[in-house]
Length: 254
Image (tube, rainbow, N blue to C red; front, side, top):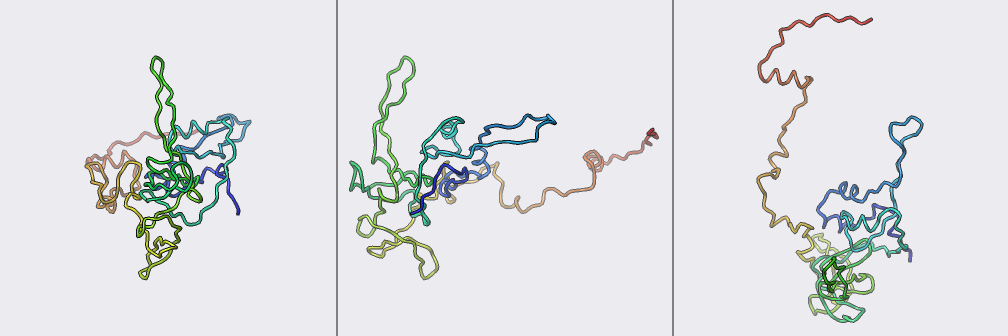
């Protein structure tokens, strides 16, 4: 089976991550951008050249955060990580899954976070490890539980809602043309949970309420600017009813 390296291209941000971020893709690209070297500017001896970081390490930190930038700081060497490509992603936030490995094998839980770049899901309250929180000067350190990620290819399985047992799924189409997940064991449809449309700022299309500063749909279709063959000064004078009656003095070029 062919594997792909998740370090080679900065554009390998998963679609699930982009939807969860609720941010423009251009903003995510700018947040990830790191300049390794560039030629001096305003110097005729150099052509303008910029070398940017291309290899990124994707972990549990999200690409638009400062923690991701620190994790991928220039000069930081990370070992290569190979990720099995998944053609049809079948796991969503809010899904009930069964853990297949580790001390919590056989337990079921709810998916709380998806890291598509590494084929990971994090199950709330399960597959945890103790982590020591770095202490500040004069204070004692603390220990907290943190969920470890699980591979969707071999370490978790979706739960069939008809019998609450783990199963494998495949995508099919209904008679109405709707694309749905179906359990291969029972043939029952596994609906996509409503939590899957939640974003980083916890806004969903149904629960979002417009504020005074939001741009409404009426303003989007309304033309608020018409280009004119006038300078800014000429447009102001026309709006204020000012007419230019001065005669400019002749100028000569030698």
